[in-house]
Length: 468
Image (cartoon, rainbow, N blue to C red; front, side, top):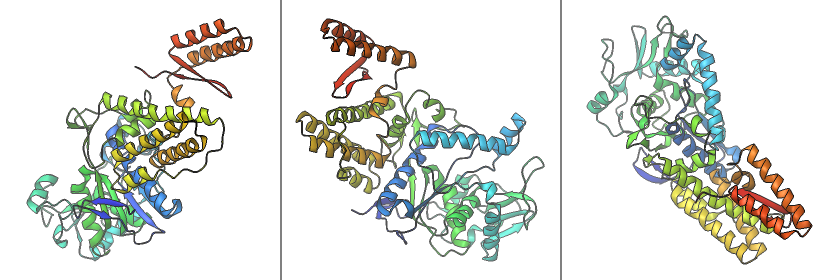
């Protein structure tokens, strides 16, 4: 089955065919590192991590190059550093480390490249120079601006008319602009801002040119897939497309443009400016990363997703169900070496259809049901194959990576774990002495602690009971 993806540019689902199957390229706009990222910022991280995994599964791990940039030149970073009285780099390094740690906790694989704006100035200045040379940009009063009139197809990605784009972008009115829609590629820095030398005077880049230059620098243009949140279609990605083409790279910038929908809270886009944000950093203190990942993938990536406590409860319950099957089948198989499953074709096929995660989740439950039925029938070969298929399919989606025992004991603190382990040891001694009343008393004591004990050939294991 061929991978099909919905292309924002053509407004249709298309078969994905890379120019070179041995060098598949994808770029996604990454974070601006001035604070902890909210959970809405991590929807594209998780969505495009899933696509990264699917591409690696199709073309081979070494044949997929994924770049996600870091914006570390920004007014918000400057303000944060000034407020704290520290160097700008200290702020950006701190929050980039936190961002990467949170992403890893959500099961996101590290991108192949993570270019930073501050380390790409030569590439940025080089692309601006190319644009001027190809009559796509002009210098004026210490600024360099992109000439939107040099790209007749400006607006084709977002589908907006020029008047609408001018209003939507809230463009700055400046006497040195040739057209109101022209946007800044380079601008003079203020006295308290970071600055870099350039042919047009000391200054810093505009936002849009940064991504185009980093793509060209680390992946080369054109690329196969460009992704990001739906809010980036205009003006950011519209401007990227115009720059990339006018810098001398022909008519194609990316073969497919992919955009995920908003994460909403109370019917409103989650946004720091609105103040309705929930930090992933805080959520990870009380929820396993896989629960947050499941919640973020529970709706189709192109649709808006409502973030609620109920969504998290549903995600936890779904994963508990799958981990329970892994736990039960693992104890039933008692150390047998798991044979390779069928890879969970039902899950892979759903993902190949424009990352249809709701259908893929249904596939995971079908695989879990097969494993459960095999255990009930005491069919070890079938249980082995079904369990392996479930693990393969879960791994493809970034789930079921924990030991089932550890998953179910995650709700127990060290004190409870110590008490439970001591009671289990006492129960084992009572059973060895055939003191069945004492063994039953201890089991009741464990049940009172909301702990379920499972006896197996290799001894007793335990888990915290699911909430009723």
